[in-house]
Length: 254
Image 1 (cartoon, one colour):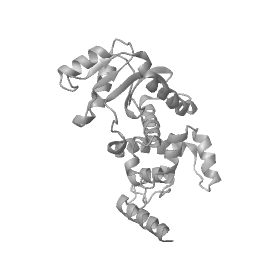
Image 2: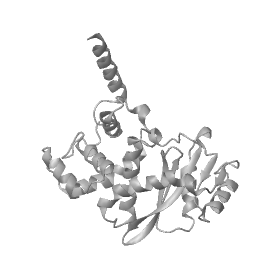
Image 3: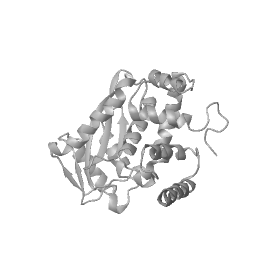
């Protein structure tokens, strides 16, 4: 049953709005007008509540589908996000191909690097654990990795490398994320910032094809269906796959 059954807005409307907001970097008011053009009358404050509720759920429910490193060579760096008029630290990790691995938002810098790396390393399969973690020259990463190795949370053989140009891939990724954040014009609280950035991280990951194995039609509609299925909207994956195969067979026979 759909997670939105019995609500004023049912079906694909809620995940559709949340996906658009997190994918294209538009303001809530712009999205309100875009939806009005398509016959859906909804206030921008309602869309805001949808994003706060559903964006973290998208990340949580699709995590096992998109959050799987395709390379054991990682690039780790931090950038800054304004929350409540103050700068917060956003730690991010991608693999050498630019695929998103994980992120962590912290109001302080002390011990944040260790907490982030511990989060990113948690739950990885043996073949997914990094052989190399490349960072900038910040002195916080070396001790953090050393402590994680002592605690058994990071493999002993993982190399910590500090080569500036190798982090170009994650720094370029920061720029794309900032394009999505810019229309927000600053977050008011850490909780709302984390919820929104969760969506901003997941949707570009899907756009990069990180869940392509679960995108049945391998196109934009398949990406949209991926998000809708996470909220039990429409047919299940098996039924959709059977329908897609039947359509392909019909096209071949035509």
